[in-house]
Length: 279
Image 1: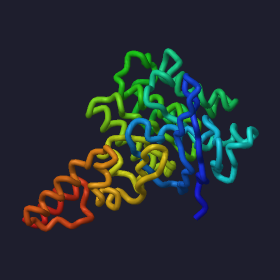
Image 2 (image 1 turned 90 degrees about the vertical axis):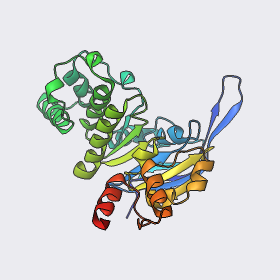
Image 3 (image 1 turned 60 degrees about the vertical axis):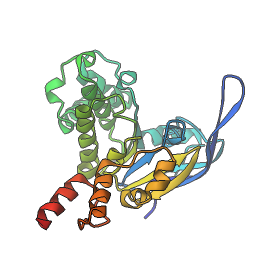
Image 4 (image 1 turned 180 degrees about the vertical axis):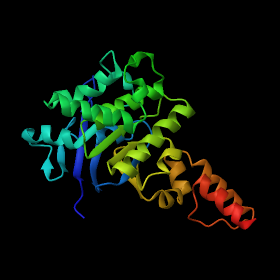
């Protein structure tokens, strides 16, 4: 399968205010396939946000290449097409919401694409319906909850019909209920709409739902694999300053207590189902 996004020997260095250079990425190699849901995890400063901003040309490599559906980001003429393919949703929705009414905000992206009004209307309606926001279409974004704001920001991106969405810590400022609502919708976009989804998060209970995950530290990919494979290396994960998922910790504790929980079970729902069968 040809990757949708290919990162080849990517290095990137920031220049700090003092003039000192800070290496954010160090010869990173990564392939992201169409339709997959990938979690990129790591502590603050690990390089995950810097990496994500290369996927649609917000940052350009100092060394190496980023290729999106055959288009290299180092060719300036490719950037508009790449940004139609890869949409970005940032941590703080207030930085993306610019209109006084929800539906106008969602329409902003399609309008900038120069689409006819009828197509814009259809895309806005579909995006709002997909995220269960139709009842909020005439509301002011600044009157919404933080979780609702984040969903509006996501709707604005999917109205542009990207084939890939990058979400940079989209639940970082949300309470548990808002976090669950946003995550459920992200999962549904990937599973039902087939949109390639790249989720940057430091919440291991979110990464556990993805098809594949990478763990970054100091600009390098330190771990890569399915959630089961990554969480099977608990000591390595903890040494990188990351939490071990509650469900995976529970399954391990049950096994140590003599209860027959298979090694590949790491989700709470799977644990409950297996315990019920044992009973």
